[in-house]
Length: 222
Image (cartoon, rainbow, N blue to C red):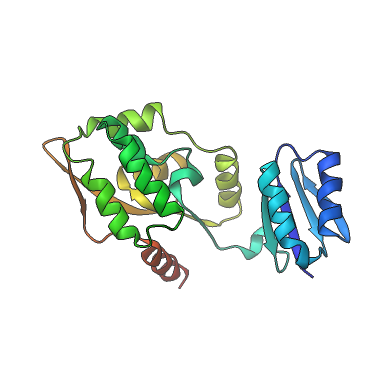
């Protein structure tokens, strides 16, 4: 049996009945406020379920088996537009007056139109050259916010002894501060080069991409 978990603050009784009918679920379980689990749903309906969730802005996940927190060893999180509400590179570009240019590359990368993340990051960071490094702290103080539920998720993981890891293709300026603020165990990201209090338009060292993220998490699990 597979399980379908749905989460949204709008999941009222009417919407629960709708999705249960679409999924042809054997059973609907109210896990907690805003979260339900459908047991034994019809997998041939998955595309229709995804369409419904997208339309109603409901988060969904398909589970092959149910697990408890004691089974989980590591909570690995991305940063930009995941743990936090912004794409940091786009906001830095805003300080440089190049936000539209950089955001267009970011969006194309997220859509999969630019396949090579390293190439994408090099292009975007090059457009940040000569930007005052002071804007990084301004972004952190005034614009960056944790997404709803982030602190509760991390606190719950920490209470159960789960290792917390922030692994991001973003920048160490932000991950290091979030690591300290949220008392995370590890943080791993790319480092912007700063010369004379200005961004050079380059990244120091090897670029952290998807493959490097996977390797870092794998090493941590061993």
